[in-house]
Length: 304
Length: 273
Image 1 (cartoon, chains in turn purple, yellow):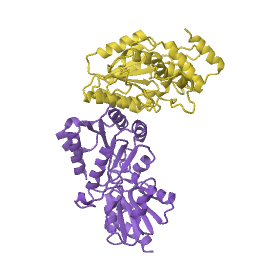
Image 2 (cartoon, chains in turn brown, red):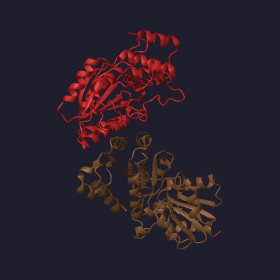
Image 3 (cartoon, chains in turn green, cyan):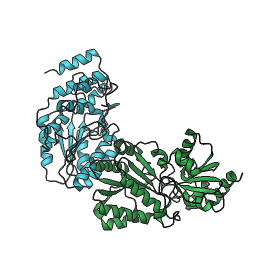
Image 4 (cartoon, chains in turn red, brown):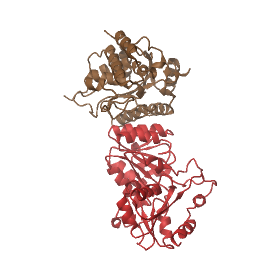
């Protein structure tokens, strides 16, 4: 996913003279190609995330197209008020890239892990949240964000080396806020986003679930929930984000507000910090989100 | 017809203060002291230095005056009224149900460039506009007015450091040193001499000026704008909070006090020609 992101940044920086990429001293090899091909388009603002967001707003006001990169733990978490007042309040077209969302930085500890980025952005006007599951969804999200003329965009980038969920045939994918990624089966429907889509596909080998990938959580509406859940009795959400304020909250609200007669279960990060400094899988296990744990947890619901 | 020029006509600062008093009474609004300390600064800038297209307020090549200390917004409104951008109706119906003029600077009001209600934001956005001007190789000027209280915000110092690093020579930061912030006197370090040393250390070309003397302000802006250096510029304006009305000067209660009929009448009397 990072390779594709690097290509997209180079591509847009080269062909659109208004595009600039800003980083708060993060990104390392992600920007190697960009710094080589168009070094003048890469601006390392320094370790100053608040000012970076204000600066991006100023650049957007002046007609440029800034893309602001940071770790999700900092962009948007550290700077949410700057995003609200400097960018959203004027509906400026700034694209935020929040990398390492979820538990990616399992060894670095809670400062670099991020379970709350969608939760803080969801109530803000004039910003759309994207949460791609693989490089094809990332490209779709990125191009959608670049086309946006009315709002800012936040692209949540989680564990980036997970298996592709769509294969390589981008032309055949019916891109949209929801994409069905496994065959329809009788049973439960799982709405998953980001890293958890490939996890859900793996679980679908063992349990009767239909998996829907949700690359644009803020665009999901009641009609989509009804359509994609089909005849299922259970709607299950799965995300590497807190169960408070993320995909699960959004879909449960849609279900409740529209009296959709389905049972609802949400799976995601719990309200606790990770304890161990170890592998990504160990961090996931602290929140019950490994494939084995989820097979068990979902099985108890589905097979009851 | 698309020439970018300053207003180039005398703006009467007593009249500006009368407008502020009028608005404040109409809306029962606060922040009189914060507005009065920057009247001469904004008047001088619009009069002689902020180059605008007087037929199109949104001309993308216009100079920018960013009021980062949004609490002084009534000073901007008073100038806008003088320029004919605001009507008597809008001034006399401040905070009435259909009026969009807010009590803090809001970039969604025509003529206001940045939202300054939350402090430490306007200076960051102004730095971004100045950076864009440099990237686009234009001679656009960006003026940012920050308060000495606002200098407490970390994002101000982030912005100053970044502006110096990228050599944003067309950014002119004006610090309104009125020695007070909401809850009392500004910190001991927030004084004229200290700010000068700090700004010089941050690589700003820095001048100290009497913030109520329009002739000195004009000379100062003029010399900084003519400077050949690549440094961003800072003007440390020595001002008086509440300037212009005797009982408001240096009395920080007028950060949040509202006028009664007697204080309103007296203020207007003192500001008559």
